[in-house]
Length: 113
Picture 1 (cartoon, rainbow, N blue to C red):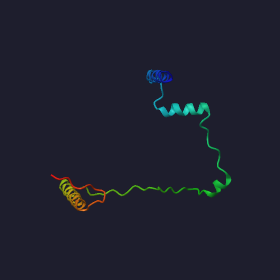
Picture 2 (cartoon, rainbow, N blue to C red):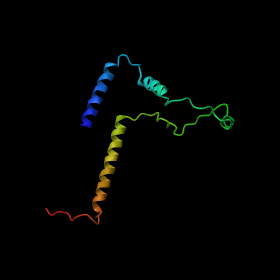
Picture 3 (cartoon, helix red, strand yellow):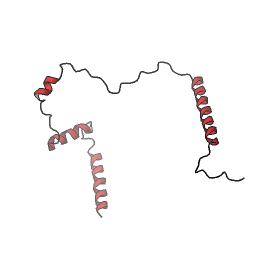
Picture 4 (cartoon, rainbow, N blue to C red):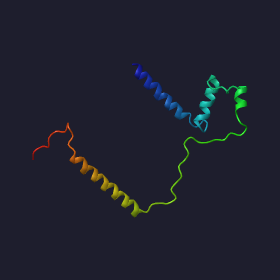
């Protein structure tokens, strides 16, 4: 019974939200921000302590932890991509051939034909 009530409330909430969508702000973030401000969940950060202000330099030098890799300026041609695909297929076939020679200790015997 409670699940039915929950589903009913959820359905009407979604329908009411869709009906009020024309009057809503352009982004949901503004509405959520106003909601957080009204409930006191979002408060401005306190001012920095003296030792924090003294330890910071005037000009911050930002350095990304994960720099973007340099892009390869050369685009590969379709023929080169096909050749690379053929090399990968040949390597996969060779690996399958090598794996077929190794007898695993738990492998069942090959079925008779």
